[in-house]
Length: 274
Image (tube, rainbow, N blue to C red):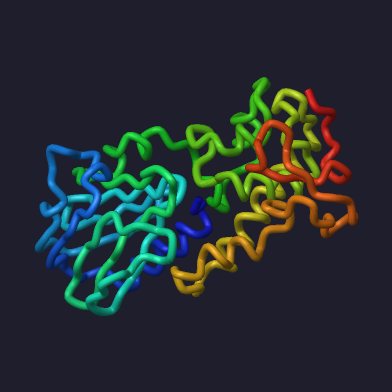
């Protein structure tokens, strides 16, 4: 799943290449991906890209006031080809749509077992339902410790699940939630209500430092290599059975995640699971 750092890198890539360029054609390969059924994808043909913005894990292309919202879901991503390509999707992925420009083709792909990519043709970015309900951006350097404390409140919800709740904090998914909690030395199964003031401060520092470093690291990485770069950077996520990079203990799957999340039980002991 692409998360804020990778989507931010993609937004920068597209902003540099598409701003001021006109759409010359479109191809919707998988019709189920277009959620704004009353507005066909070819409505954007002939329009010029005036802005590219990121909203959590979503991207919005502003085309002279008509917006194309791209939601990558669980396994979506994008490709770029400088010319015609018969097969512009990476291995294991299917092309969902192609947006043609005079200098190249933007492909939208999905590598999941079920379709999760979504496209919306709308008049404003926040007309996309999943964008409208987003909370503050997790990668925003201005996101404060007080805002985090307010979001956590006294909620009886496990920290890993809460960090992935887009209505609370936008842009964090499965992988970075593991990395943030590891950096904070917090148990992923503990509830937000159990956090002390020191725990919240530590979580805020880990949130800021982890995402800031990831955003910087992803800049300039070719979009086709973003997934590999993300996987290589993980310290605990996806490392089941490997030694902890800090204490040497064994990294384990988080209970109840069915292998979808990882932690170091030796390091992440605070607060007591509740």
